[in-house]
Image (cartoon, rainbow, N blue to C red; front, side):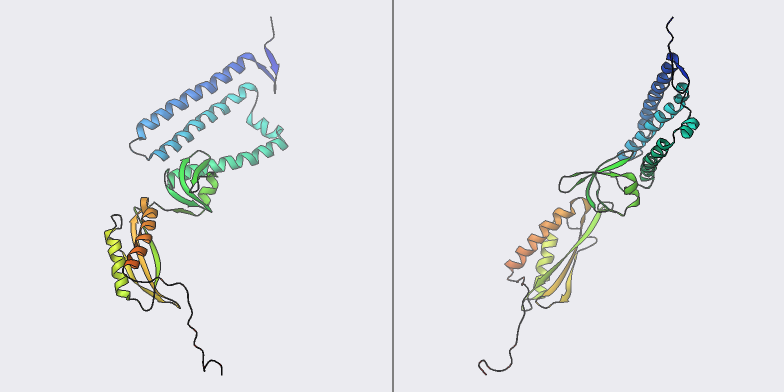
Length: 268
């Protein structure tokens, strides 16, 4: 009869290997069943991005538990590995520390919900649209089309600016007109442009007022609220329409200039 055992931290038989693989397989099946039930129970109660991240955490968590339970069948006891691992154990410890930190940060992102898939955000120095929130990382597509993977630990510990967290967003312009132009007429033209745009909110209402008397121009401040999902498009459209409207009204937008008074007569 052929001996079906070999030495790996002790005698491990073919039966032990089969049982280990069966344990892992069962954990995978259980993880899939639990994941399916979670989706059925929460699909109408939880946002899709949260549900997706929760599914991943539960799925891989159950499989990890199954592997840990099966390791003793191969003679791999966690306490023994920690003692015998030596330098390898220290290296793995540092590596796993980062993994665990990202995993826990991902869980906190689910609880706190500072961002969700589809949001326009700025995380640290990275700006773009959130495309996916994974177990260990968050994927952002920048406005110039770059794919950026950010570890969840960095996402959770960074300053996060969410441009669409609220339904409306305010933006403003600083527009200069000549001192010889009629400021009241300029304000009237700008207000007409704002009133005619379908996405400019009436509440909070837009404001237009003289903000500063500069060296070369009278500065008008224009503050506008628009839906967060289209604010950038509205901002670009209004800027052009205000320029066209002011030009049609004969109001100049001056460039920087300086008036110099020379004392005395030329040639003296």
